Length: 332
Image 1 (cartoon, rainbow, N blue to C red):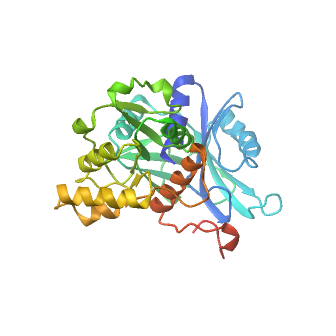
Image 2: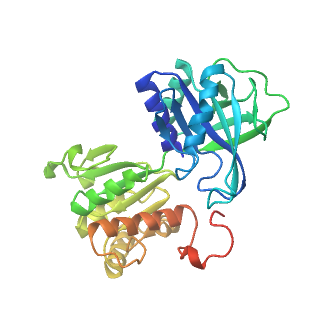
Image 3: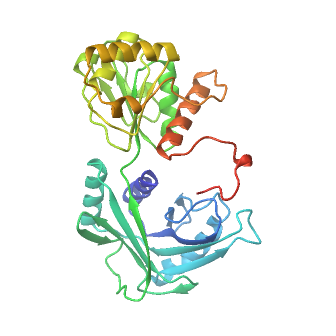
């Protein structure tokens, strides 16, 4: 959800107009999205983000007009049991969104430095208007409300949310399949960096949705991983793949994928262990090769979907299965 919040704040800063922030703070039953999802509404009716699959937004827009007019925060209750297929009741906090410069500076510094942060939203679980309803962002030990004019929070319920750094994907390789993987990962909301050899004369324009292009020779490559970073190595060169794996041997991330068949992975592991006998089991355990889930993928686009699906499966600790075969709730 951090990437959605980034988009909200980017749009707010670019437009500089009056805005209302909508946050799903509670849910009874089931819904398309879970508590913690947000959207931003501008006074002219433009919206950034969504709090559902599209069925709730018109009502959010309608009720947000009251907040624009009065400046008083509201909790709206949307009962979808008789209107939606989700059969849930949403409690949505609507509040003036007018962060000051100190808030914005801390927010972007936190994003850039890939630090987690917390959001606390204060409300009552009922349809109501109240000056004291508000959200605060916690960066380190410092608290920042989303607008300077907030009241006391005593006696209110609180929805607390820990926000992780934006998930990022490091693609090592710059061929056509890497372009497709970059595009699809960016559509997912991930920050995508691509590692290309300087001699390939690639530019950021070659990779739709790219966050950063890193042009470096394999022997000079260095990169620090964290739990919110996945890597896919797809240079189509065994020697280069091995060099990049060796460069990452002391790093632990969320996932490392290798393109190519099982035999190629085993050969690469043999070479790696011969050259780096002290490599840890934890490092080897995070390597997935061949990368992807077996969905019968053939084209670069389908292969990209297969790889992204495996990354999501690994990071969310879920075994892939058809939802029609799953008993109980979809979100567990």
